[in-house]
Image 1 (cartoon, rainbow, N blue to C red):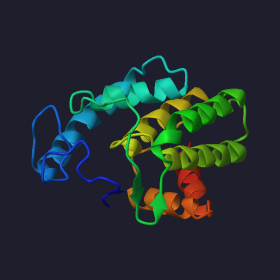
Image 2: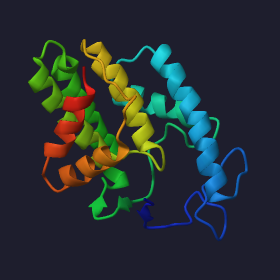
Image 3: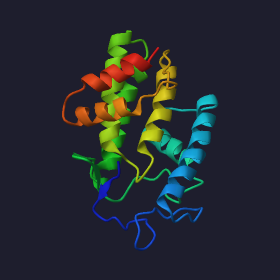
Image 4: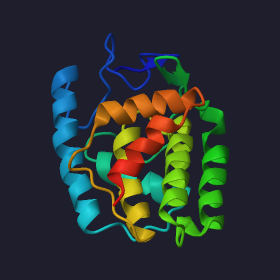
Length: 195
């Protein structure tokens, strides 16, 4: 599912919607394949050896930078254009830093969900996932950054998340419904995945 943007040419090769990249790949499918390989390897590295996470907004941006630095000059930087997906309009670029800072400060104030009983933990994780998804701070790579960040956050709280049976359709449906105010499928996704 592709994004709608105020300016489809922003950060793209002229006359295309292919993002300008360090590998100078100008074909959308080839770029998606290269992204998948590179970010898959980088995500594996972060799962084995995290970047000493402090679970701040800066830490979140560093995860994105680590995943996408081989591909994009703007890796780790918040987006400068408005984007939407289907009927979901994400946070306006001028509010990303302020809102992102508040989201991660709230996480800190809740002690990163440590010590919560499982049902409350799952509910809080689903709510945070939805909130960060609506923030959608990056031009590309939001979902991959979220998955790595949540793997680390969940482990830090004494739980594990099993992505081996990762159902991207259920997660996507859950995030779309959450944007409309219905959290059930997103909570169910995490309830099944968190062990």
